[in-house]
Amino acid sequence: MRAREATEADAELLLSWRNDPRTRQSSRSTAVVSLAEHTGWLRGVLADDERLLLVVEHDDAPVGTVRFDRRADGWEVSITLAPASRGRGLSGAVLAEGERALRERLDVRIVLAAVHQDNAASAKLFEHAGYAEAAPAVNGFRQLRKTLR
Image (cartoon, rainbow, N blue to C red; front, side, top):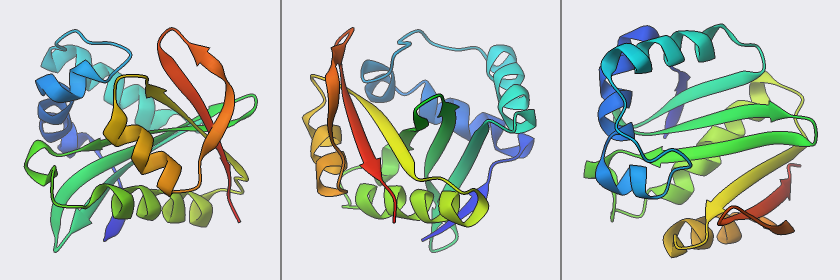
């Protein structure tokens, strides 16, 4: 696994993953996003020092994305696996590579995750990665936290 920073050239790939029905089902925003909307969002993320968007590759092929957004109490993580990568046991390695790349680039100690209460696979992923309940659920999302070493 290798994480690299996303670029504008990744726009269509990331949009296809973002608009996948299973991805949308577990997201805070479940609407389909247009290419124009996504490109504007992507440009904003890439220009923002308070955000880090990574594409994780396995055997030189993109298999997922990990995004970190700075919050007052830590950096919130969001992970998406490419639809073709699901069911291959890659999510833990994608998350771990994202965390490794984050620590390499920034002095981060606390990582947060908001996991949809109906997403058992995501909850299992974060729990196995060392995340624990940090606060009561908000709007149907469990609030998890991990201290990086």
